[in-house]
Image (cartoon, rainbow, N blue to C red; front, side, top):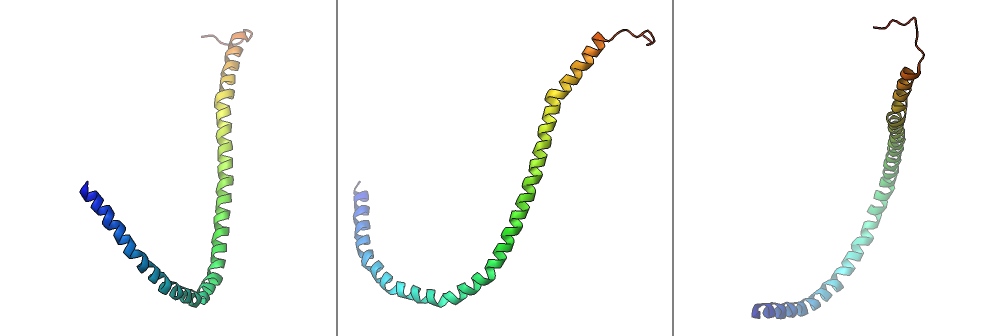
Length: 114
């Protein structure tokens, strides 16, 4: 328990010493960062002017690929729905019709019976 209290005390004391150092670094460092930012503006402008058309072309290609893939998946999902309807509805109806035709069909005297 004593070690925990000692760690908390010296941690708080260390923070008290670090606050003035942080203020000094902020006072000295912020103007340097501002000057570097002003010097970097022409580079950022060139990168923006060169990179924006590349970004737009990439975005257009990605959009076209996405639309193509979406339309393809829509048609494939429609095909899956049609197959489900065929298996669930039409094949049982075909089987029931075949059974009913066999049951209720008139006897054909010309048919050869085995």
